[in-house]
Image (tube, rainbow, N blue to C red):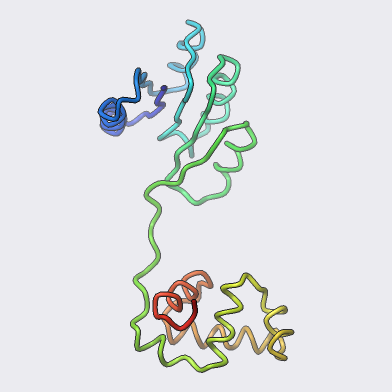
Length: 178
C-alpha cells in the first residue's frame, strides 16, 4: 500500500495504524516528486491512498503517474465537500473518494420544536424525505410550489435550520416521520 500524505504527523500516524492492522508493506511519501521517483523505480502495488493532497493541484498528475505505474486501486481521501477537487479526482480515473472529518450537522432540534409541527408541515417533511421537489410536493398535497416553500421556511424557523436534509434528520430523530 502507498500513502501519499504531505503532513508528517498524519502520515506517520496512518502508517502506524495500517501496520497495526496487518495491512502488509506500507510505503509513505509526501509529494508528486516522491511518487514520480517510485514510479521511476518500477514500484507498484495494490492500493494507493492520496490522503492530504486531494484538494491540491498535484492530485491529477499523481493519479496519472500511479495509473501508468500499475497501481491497482487509487483512493483519494478528502476533508472538503467542495465538488471541484472531487470532480478532478474522478475525472482522473480515481477508484474512490472517501470523505473524512467533514463537519457534522448542528445538533438536532429539541423534541418540543419537532412536536409543534402541524400535520400539514409533517406531510411536507415526509415528502421532502422521499426526495420530492417543491413542485411535486405541491402537486401531491394540492398546494402551489410557493406554498410548499412557505411551509418549509416556517418549519425551518421552528426547528432552527433551513437545510432540507437536516429538517428530515430532525423529523426522523423526533419520531414524527419514519
